[in-house]
Length: 351
Image (cartoon, rainbow, N blue to C red; front, side, top):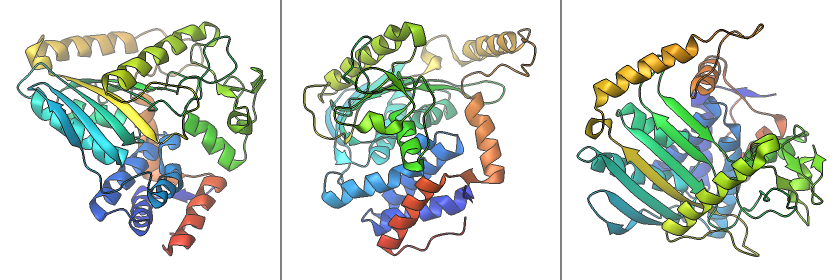
C-alpha cells in the first residue's frame, strides 16, 4: 500500500487539477481540501475524487471558472447559485460570507444550489469553530445520486445526505460531528470497489434487498442500496435523510429526489452559523462545554476500553498519525491517480 507525505500529495493533486484545466487558485484550494480529508481519515472525500472531478471538468458538466452568484441577500441570509462550479471553492466563499455576517448578528444562514461536490462538511464547521462560532451544515445530492432506500424498500430513493454540527472549545480542539445519514458514505463503497475489496456486512444491500459484501452490487442494473444508519432502527437514519432532502433541495431552489435523475453531479446545501456572543455569551458557553467534556470523559470505562471518543477525536488522532507517517492509499486508488497523471503528463511522486 503506497504511503505519501501530505505536502507531496497536495502538490501532486494541485498539479493534476491544473493540468486538467483548473485555474491555479482553485486547484490549490480543492487539492488542499481533499488532502485534509485524507489526513483526517475521510478517504471517501479525499484524493480518490480527483479522477471523477476532472472527467466532469473535461466534459463540461463542471465549470472550473464558475463563482458564487448571490441571488438574494439580507443582513443575515444568502441564497446562492454555484453555476456547477467546483464545490469546495463555492462552499468556502459562502462560509466566509456567512461568518462575516455573523460577526454582527446572532445567526447567519445560506443556501447553495447547482454546486459540484462540496467535500467534507466538517471542513466548514472547523472554519467556524476557529472563530468561536457554532455551525450546522447539511447537503443533499441535488435530486440525483440516489443510493438509499426507505426501510422496507429495495430501490434507492435519496442520497446519503450528510449533516455536520460544530462547536468551538474543547480540551483537544473543537467538537465536529460530521456524519452521513446512511450506514456508510457512497464514496467509501467506491473506494472499496476501486481497490477490489469487499465492504463490511451491514453497509449495503443487493438489488433484491439482501445483505451483501460485494461493492459492485451497489452500481448494478438494477442497483443495490446503502442501508440507512441506525441498524435495527434504521427508520431514524432514513427519517433524518428525508428531512435533509427537503431542507437542502427545497429551500435552496435546487431539487429534491425525483424519478429517473441524471448521473450525480453535486450538491444543494444549507449552512447555518451561530455566534454565541449574542446568545449565552462566549464565557458561559466555554464554561459549560468545559464541564460537560470533563464529566463525559471521566466516565468509568468498560474493561479493555482505554478512552471514550467525543466528536472530533477520531479525526484528530488520524491527523496526528498521518502527518507523522504519511497518507496511506490503496493500490487501486493510487493507480487511478498514476494513470491520470500519465494521461495529463504530470510527474508522479515517489510513494
